[in-house]
Every structure is written in C-alpha cells, then in structure tokens.
Image 1 (tube, rainbow, N blue to C red):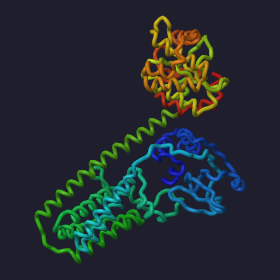
Image 2: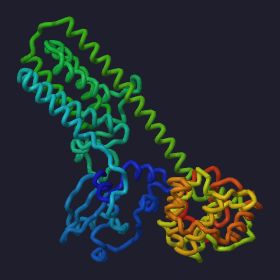
Image 3: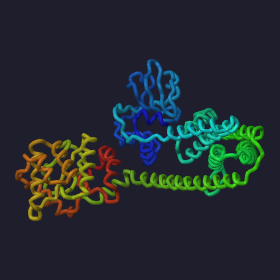
Image 4: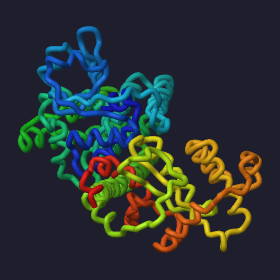
Length: 502
C-alpha cells in the first residue's frame, strides 16, 4: 500500500493510526473521516459505472476489497494499491465497487520527510559483498551471497511480524492464493508458528542463523569447517519445516521453500568445497558471535513487541476517545449562560450554528498552543464562528496588559480578524513587549475596552478565571480530552442538528 500513500502524499503510519483508531473502522466513513482529519477534503459518492466517465482524473475506489488510488490514462486506468498496475476500463468496472471518494488534489506533501534507511542497508551489504568477492574464494563468496539473500528474506519476515511491509515478502507471496482471499499460504504458516523461545519464533531464528553465518563467512578467517558443521545442522530445520507444511498445515509457503532452497545450496557448497580442518579458536569465536546476535535479536524483538503492544493499547484508547456519543455526553455536562453577547473579537462566519470560543490571557504560556489550535480550526472550517474572550480586569491589570489588549482591539477594529490572528501569533511566538511594540507601534494607543471588560466579567461570574478554556456553543470542552482532540469532533458537531437544539 506504500504507493497508495505516496500518491496521496500522506504519512502511512499517521494515516493507519488515525484510520484504525476510528470508532467505525474499517468502514468507508472512517476512511473518509481520516482523509479529512489529515487535511484532504473529500466526498463519498455511490455512482453507477455507466457514469464513471464523468469522474475526475484521480479518485479513490474499493478494488478487490482494498482502498485503491485510481488515475485515468487514455482509455485505461492506472491503479495504485499494493503495487502499480494498468487496467482496462471494463476490468476495473467489473472488480471495483460503485463507491468512489473524490478529493481535492494534493499539491504539497502533508507529512514530514522521512529518512529512508533501506538504501543505506542495501549499500552496506553491497559493499560487504564486494569485500567478500576480493577476499574469499569463489565458493565462500557464493555462500556469503546466499546468506545475504537469507538475511533480507528473514528480515522481511521479522518486520512483517510488526506490521511492516516488505517488497521481498510481497513478491514471493503474491500468487500463492487468489488476491481476493484474506490470508495467503505464507501468512497461514507464519501465524501458526508454535515455537516461542524468549518471544522468538522459528522465523526469528532464521534471521539469527543467516546473520551469524554471514559474519563468520566474512570476518572470521578459517571458518569454513565451522560453516560446514552449521550447514549440516540446518538439515534438521529443513526436515521440520517440510513436515510441518506438508502434514500439519497441508500447504506450502513460498518464502519457507525459498529459505529451504538457500539452505540446501549452502549445504552442497560446504560439502563439496569447504575443508574439514577444525580450529578451536574459530569455534569459540563462532559461539560468541551467535550469542551476541541471539541477545541482540531478543532485545530488538522485545523493544518492538512492547512498542506494538503500546500501539494496540493506544488504538483502543483513541478509538474510545474518538467516539462522538461519549464526547457529546461529556461536553453537555457544563454549560454557561453569558449575559453579554457582544461581538468583540468575533471571527469567522457570523451566523454559523457552531461557535468555538476561547477564554485566554496574553500572559498565559499555555494559551499559545490553544491559539494555534483555534487558528487551525478557523482556517480549516469556513462554516463556523469563533470568539476570543480575554480575561481583562482593569482593577487587576498592569500597564503592559492594558496596552497589549488595546493594541489587539485597535488592530481588530481597523484591519479585521486576519490581522488580529496574525498579531496574536506574533505575540505568543516572541512574547516580548518591546519587539511587539516595534511591530505594531501605530496601534499602541488607548482603546475603548468596555466590551472586553463585559466579556471578562461574564467569564469571572461563571468561574472561568483559569486560562485557556475552550467553549463550544458555550459548553466547556471536557477536561478528560486533550485540546487537540477537538479536531476529531468538529465535523460531527456541524452535522449534529440535535446538538443545536439543546
């Protein structure tokens, strides 16, 4: 699915986390909501195939039970899911559902650039392969190359256990069953692996094995006899694997058979070409190498397992937290009746049903984050209103606070809401009154603050003296939620007619 995420220019990890933690996962609604959450505006339609010619050049549909990115190409389609492929119009129409997601074209990458370590690993093994070619016999070089292939396959299996995709594994597994079936033969074998030694499976020992013989063959001189003995021991693993596939699971795994083939070729190379001279120092070095690798793989496996467990717990927690009905119940607990309903520092659509207010203070350090959230909401949603309610009490305020509030009021009155938001952003970014005065020198004159004082008194009369506080239609945003969680519920709030009746 990497190609799918690349076409949408979104982070795969972020998308999957938000998608899988949606209360309605894995529905079409949860997919659409996740795109919206990541900033991709989209709409879902059920359109008869006869009308697909009217669709835009790019859209998303469900093909073979997978969400698939589709591009029109002349009379055919390019589809991007597990891999890119070209498909005729008639074939896509036969295999895809009638549901399509039409989205606004993404012009910019929406996630942070990530370092791709794969090429670093490939380069690492390529260099050592060259080293092996010039330093060893042809037979040992071929033996080491097979070890590298085994490492890549075993590493792919190891990563797949933790939900990471592998090009090698996908290539070997494709075709083992029809793509429409949920579990391939490979996955069936992996999932039924009964070996569990320090949380390591048989496939994990495969990684230790190939890494070990690779290190021995490349860095430990005179190790051929040890490699021969180790290769002979792999006959037991080959016998166990074949018996398990043939008589227990009654199906063959392409990856397992590939590894078995590598082991058999290595056994033949060692039998035909490696000497029998035994060196005790090489033997003890070999034990140390395998013990180090064994401990290292156990450590990495435990770290990744704990991370996977935490990820699953986080999914459950976020799924619970994203439940709109639970959120709404918590939101409706505390409502405030404000007597002064003036529109000072009012932002957005004036007659919008949904209003988000923030109780704030220019000298509140925590308010910086809250203002960033409010500005993101305003920029993303054009059908809501917002109000900034400063806790300004003239009897308690010093000259600095009065001058800043006056500057905000003058900026709002003369240049409008966008300039006010920009000024607030600059203030919280630097939090330096001297520099702020230089930037907005013309606005530092005393303003009429009576309306702001009325709002502040209303805040105080309702017990809203701590800042920042978010209010949604005068309901206090629940303390059980992080302020950033508000993004999960805005779409639901806008569509909830019952909420506006309360």
